[in-house]
Length: 148
Image 1 (tube, rainbow, N blue to C red):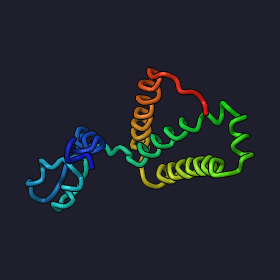
Image 2 (cartoon, one colour):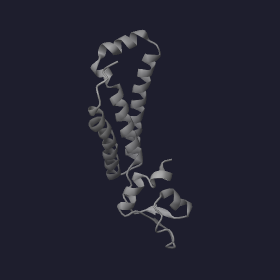
Image 3 (cartoon, rainbow, N blue to C red):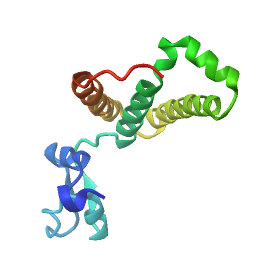
Image 4 (tube, helix red, strand yellow):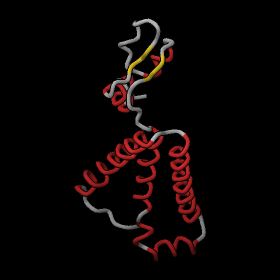
């Protein structure tokens, strides 16, 4: 969706920077830098390092959500109060933890069946980097809001 403004995605840029290219029988597709355009033109996308986008997305989103629900570990009385009310708030807390468990299971499955070790390590680094920029770099500079 952002490719119309920013060009190829970061993962595709890493792939091309590490030697990846669009290959076909003719040399017409050598200057294609996006996987979708390469496949549409009948070429194959290969040769570079493929950062695991699944790993980036799962690590970043799960760390983001863990950070947002971390108040539950620092404020047990708040969690007990929400649990005693037994309404939508408690259902949403359970749903968030269920979603986190499901995301970590998806990470185990994608690690086991779909990617190699280097792809997973680079995906994990980029997922952690996105989280660290926000939660270690930017948010500590803002005024504190406090626990719910």
